[in-house]
Length: 190
Image 1 (cartoon, rainbow, N blue to C red):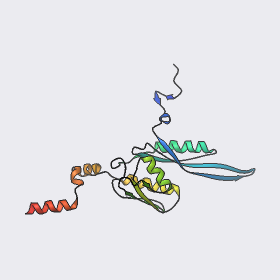
Image 2: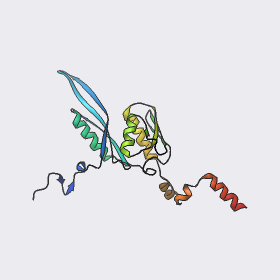
Image 3: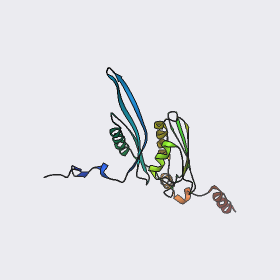
């Protein structure tokens, strides 16, 4: 029984699915001095996402650039995270993320703002599917640290539904404004 070339044990390869978009963030050439001269290697940093709330990053090293990018893309697909988005376009609340000396601040934004973020952070938001966000990188400008700090912040984000579920309340109770609560208690006392 002959199998199709793109099947392994009855499962299709995940690399064949075009549902993920990827963005090359950084490529670094490193050299090793040996007896006959220098040997060059390449390190690639890639962000992968489905633009519907899932994103991941990976790094790969190889002697050739395409091989390094391929390795980084595979690693990024393996370690994707899901992020809950408000109305499918922005974050639910403001977030701080940290990794090493890298620190990032991400804020929700009204519709039409666009992605106001620099370099590696912009790549993550585009692959995530965020349309409106304001972000600032403080501290380290190293793309690896910026991406890790951004991912740290995104993992901390929680939607009103998840908070309500954790507290055993309804989403409407969580989203009530403090002023309306004060008015309701005053009316109840009267």
